[in-house]
Length: 349
Image (cartoon, rainbow, N blue to C red; front, side, top):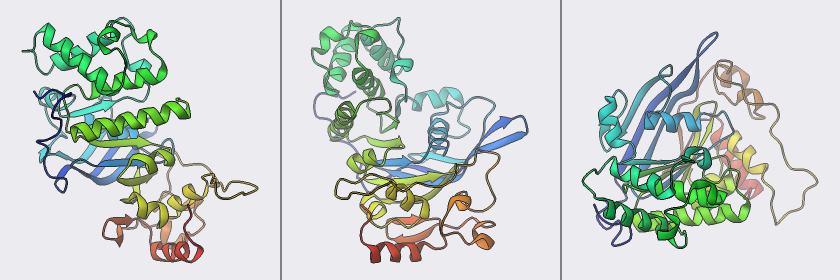
């Protein structure tokens, strides 16, 4: 295995190639009244060496989709569709074969870093355990060397000394750095970062995002970034997918989606952001609340809160993906009208 601290990423495939292909992913959870869909017919791709951000409100299905990809949903969950990673179908894969992919070829950074770390084990032991489970041939000295290299990669000072510290001896930002180190322990092709900056102050958030950028530059790893923070998306992502009600409402390169949003939900999210170049008496807000799984309306899930809705159409039909530009799609029948209005009013951000 190539060391993470030397010659990183030189053998990664071409950036234009596909890495992950998700098609019609549906995740349903058991409730008192039957099964409710947290994710409905979700489709997207992740390419080599890119960062795709999935953004949306709490309950939009972002994390459920990621957990389905990792095979970490509870047994009671019903998952259907297709999850193809480098051409291999992950859905329905026997657990033993899935374990060979999980952690080795696909790494993950969990949302609550402190809860994900074992308080009874040193940080070094937790990193070496992540490596040894996939490469049992490595001896103790090689494992220690690799763990120290990983801590150095994520910017933890005195890495050899900090290997012997316990999680409670680290700050919140350091916990997240350790989780990134564990996620990168086996040089995965894809790293899933589930809300990696949640509960961190703005300065530490910026540091963690810098670490992610640095790791990706050094290794060529693709990143699937799950977040509700549009500011995070603007700073690190190549493309963004906007989720609502378990569905993909809009997807495209960051510049196109941010400056030419084609779905009312995306535009509403952007209008709700504070801006340093304008003073407004009140921020725009989206009326109402997202409907929980099991109680979502037929048709477009955003239709009850949408100011552009055509009830006779939006309340009954799910719009097929409409191509706004070569890399930009949306699931709104009025996309061209909204895009035209955006151009006439000037950039929203």
